[in-house]
View (cartoon, rainbow, N blue to C red):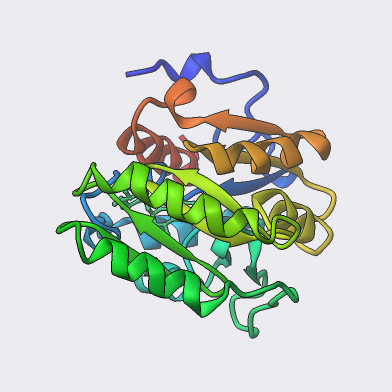
Length: 247
Ligand SMILES: O=P(O)(O)OC[C@H]1O[C@H](O[C@H]2O[C@H](CO)[C@@H](O)[C@H](O)[C@H]2O)[C@H](O)[C@@H](O)[C@@H]1O
């Protein structure tokens, strides 16, 4: 377990530093919760939604989950009124009580998804997950699907590289529109109250989170990789609980 003293000084989050200065951006899968065999099988500790709510209150609302998941998933797993950014920045809800902000982005041709579904049908355990503008082919439970999915989707994206990109996720390939990312999500949130003027800290575990971390650094903040700073989601959750309790 990493020693909390290894966190970079001065800590910027509540309980370990100046609460008024921080804005916290938290990835979901692999960061707040452990990776599961399927997207619908993640286990959210019962205390986590309430913990995030308390932390958000302590930060004057300047806390957002920033995930590749659609907002509907985030609302399902984290049923609390906090800011959320879903679909890798393609769906933003800075005000938990207001409708989401949906930037104008291209939507993948239905034929691409149909072809992915047809491929997955030959790989038991594989699955296609729909997103607002794109989709994901998951091969965690069907490893042989990985290279085939990559070849298929890379071919599609190559026909319209200005509009779409192929993202390598954890045991998954995702077709997503260009123009949205965790960086755009962080920047959009940092333009608004209560995030504006605070020092952002982005915590994540994945390659897409690096974009959010880079954006946070652009505002004078920090990006923390889960592996480096905490090791596991459980250690992060414990640390957040200590922070929320002012320990
Ligand atoms: O940005 P995140 O919150 O980290 O979301 C990234 C993707 O996470 C999900 O897929 C990953 O987690 C699943 C559950 O643990 C796992 O089964 C899968 O293999 C991983 O790739 C989610 O399904 C995607 O939509 C997110 O983009």
